[in-house]
Amino acid sequence: MTASPRRLRSDRGVVVTQLVLVVPALLMMGLLVVQFALVWHARHVAQYTAQRALAAARVEDGTAADGRMQARRSLAALGSRVLTTSSVTAERTATRTTVRVNGVVIRVLPVPGLVLHASGTASGPTERITIPAGGQP
Image 1 (cartoon, rainbow, N blue to C red):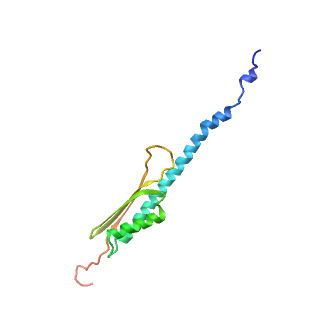
Image 2: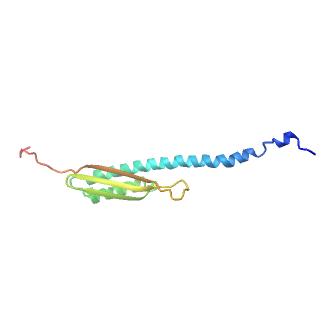
């Protein structure tokens, strides 16, 4: 018996093969979009935290420790799950205050060695009382 040409060209099983190849690729692309959305969000959380910490540290009676404490509170309220392993540095001089917030973004993609960082920096003049040059206001 010979096989008919109709049986040799059967498309049977092709859909399963396509699904096995296409679905993981689509899933990976979707996870990649979610991962970079989390990076974008974590950068905004870090920047907002740095700005809040700067506002606390730069006031006349404020200290760098006040800025770090405010940053920790902001991170606990906003980004403790998105921005992990965070660090806060605050520097205050007589004229300038700077706060930096760094952290590691939570990982969605199961890629070994993938470590994405997010950071935010805020800097501004330190508030202080000054006397006009002429001696009288």
